[in-house]
Length: 317
Image 1 (cartoon, rainbow, N blue to C red):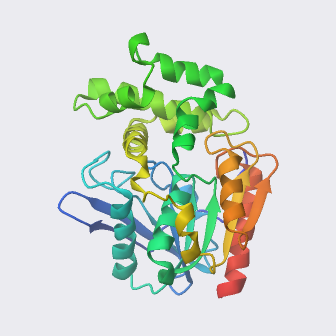
Image 2 (tube, one colour; image 1 turned 30 degrees about the horizontal axis):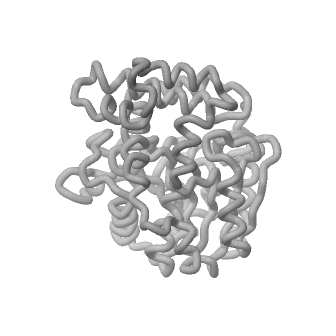
């Protein structure tokens, strides 16, 4: 698919590793205009990491874009580390990074798990948010986790069959627990094949039309290990979210401008979740992309996200 509608490729003007505790070092980078509107990019997964393509969502003249890889993800170290890796930890890391960069408030941009983290951060620190651009909504509720593990097979039976049949027949009654046991095994001969099976399953279901490039990227060892191990970890623990979930705290951020972009045929994070969020947050600008699945890189979704950033630029410039 063409990506000519994105902004030109860009290199960061600053990068770093932020030590957030005795275990984790968080990779971060700044791109665009050092004096522009601060915006923080929250990648999906958890565990996937940011990429150079993600920089291209942000107008380099208007925005000071901060991208970082969450604990255990991407270029952060150690990859796949689960100790001290919870949603409150990630929220605290964002605050550490904001303070390290001397930013008073920033726009929060996140998709898939990034939308989960954006909402969790916003509800913890509403006074540090300019607004939100959210895509492919995931609230980490039990029904959504069950959909990922089982429901996607109604639309993608072949990838789901490969995912489920990776496990011996006797272990398929609890896919999450038995994948998690393998993914957390210290032996790469055990955890890497499980990670590839999990991650390739997700990649195969992430676009409306088949995308061999997407599937190949999800199957790469470092990406697969971070993504699969952290997703299973967060699913096992219910996303480390409060008992009332994220819908219960929307009152803290409903006064802030927000755009919600959702692919009609998103199989990974089905539209019913975005619809639920939009009904609970009627002030948000809810946009359905009629010809898109889950990936932020699908043409209609890219265009809506770029347009949302343009509108936010007009509001805050």
